[in-house]
Image 1 (cartoon, rainbow, N blue to C red):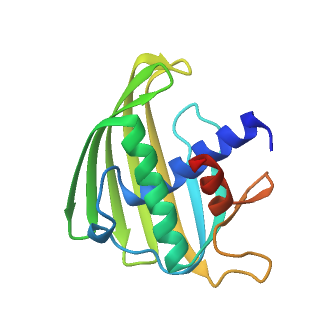
Image 2: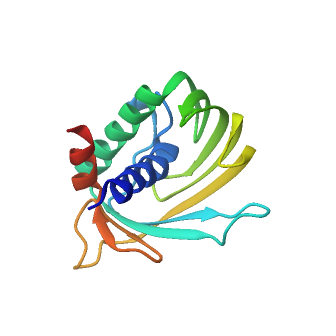
Length: 175
C-alpha cells in the first residue's frame, strides 16, 4: 500500500468513524452501533461530488476499537472538543488542525436507536482548506443486516474502491 493511499485510507477511516463517535467523547456516553453491516453515505452539498457510499462490517469489539482509534486521531488533531449528549442527540464543537488550516466545527449527531444515525458537520477553515473556507458535510448511516460471508469485522468497501480492513489500517497507523 503506497504512503498516499495509506494516508487517504486513514483519513477516510477517521472521518467516517469519528463522526459517529464524536470528538473527545467517552465511548460509554454514546449509543452503541448494532453489530452487522452498516451502509454509510456522505450526502453531497451544493457544488459537491455525488454521494459517496461505503459499507462496513462491525462487531462490538471492532466498533470499540475503531472508536478508540477515531478518538485518538481527534486527540492528536484537535485543541478543543466539547461534547454534550442529550438523549439521542450528541452535539460537538471542536477546533482542529487539518493540514495548515484551523478547522472550527459544530456537529450534531442524531441517533435512531442502535440501527441508524445522521450527522451534520458545519466547518469553517482558516486559511481555506482545499480552496474552501467553509463546508457542510452530512453523513447518514444505517444498519442493513448481518455481515455477508465475504466480509469480516472491520472490512470497509467503498462504492468504487477496494475492500480494506480498517483494523489493519489503524494498526499500521499506530506504528
